[in-house]
Image 1 (tube, helix red, strand yellow):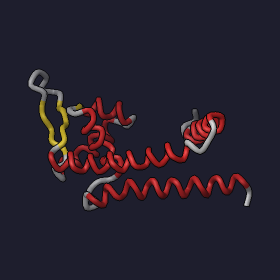
Image 2 (image 1 turned 60 degrees about the horizontal axis):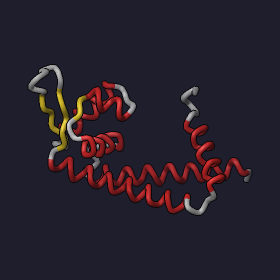
Image 3 (image 1 turned 90 degrees about the vertical axis):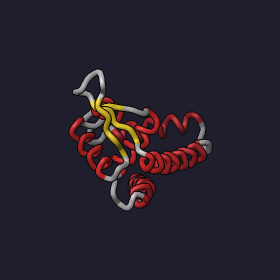
Image 4 (image 1 turned 135 degrees about the vertical axis):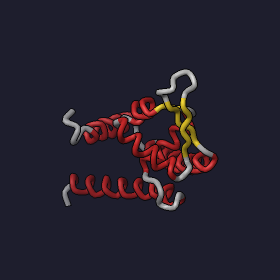
Length: 146
C-alpha cells in the first residue's frame, strides 16, 4: 500500500468516526435532526437570539438552507421564533428547553472530540503541527476551487 493510500484510508476512518459522533446527537433526538441542525442548536446556545441572516453568516450556509433547518428544528420544538417588536420583518430564533438539552449534548460531543485532537497533537513538534495544518488546509480546498 502506498503512503498516499494509507493517508486516504486514515482520513476516511476519521471522517466516518466524526460522522458517527455527530449521528449520536441525532440519535439522541430520535433521528429527527441532522448534524447541521445539531450545529445550529449549539450555535444558538452560544449566541442566543439570532436571525436567519446571522445564522447563515455564522454557519457559512445559504439563507434557504438555514430556513429549512430551522423549520425542522421548530417542528420538533427545539427552536422557537420571536418576531422583533421594533422590526416586524425580522424574526429571531431561540432555543426551547428541549433544544437547550440537545445543544448541550452536541457541545459535549464537540468538546470531547477537541480534547482528543489536542491530546493527539501534543505528540507532534511545532513543525510537524504546521505541516499537518498545511496539509489539512490544502485538503479542505479540494472541491472549492480555491
